[in-house]
Image 1 (cartoon, one colour):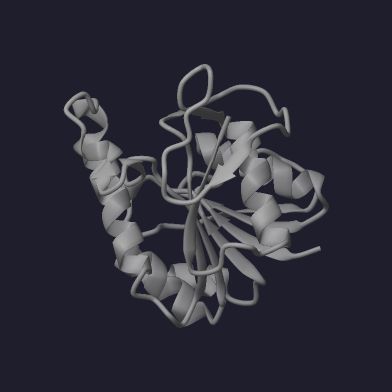
Image 2 (cartoon, helix red, strand yellow):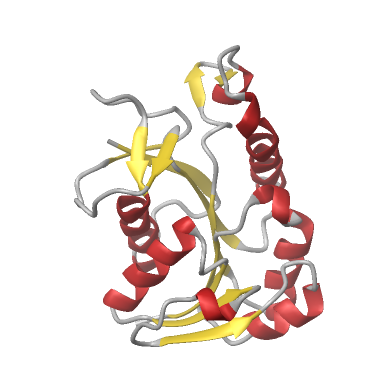
Length: 203
């Protein structure tokens, strides 16, 4: 059982990760701008936190075994987040990543394809920047887990594939549910296999 701080615990991905952590018996400090939106679950303590207030955030993170970040890239600052984790003295840092930086062919990222939706470009670009920043971090045991192209509500099936830097494409295209993504992330938390690496999950 780990003591985990989850930033962005009320969001689409964050709320599923929160439930997965709770169901597996972990203790979670669930952090969000509006703690009233955080689900009341066993082992969960909801607290108010702002990702742009580094010192206050570091205070909330202190004393945990791991930090999970599940916030939108365009609504946060990777330098501030990484700095808060460092200041808190927590070595293990897992980031809910994006799919845009995954490769569809050697050297060809998904975000750079002509049919990449313009509406998601800013978020995808910010996620790629976050990953590039993490690649230069050698004092944290970070992991960046990229979802597949379609990251959507669905079922918790427990049946999925893992990959590294290439976009995973199955019979129904490239997709993963928030629920199955949460399984893959908490598996990585419990049994680290991709320390200082990015990996991906899909059907």
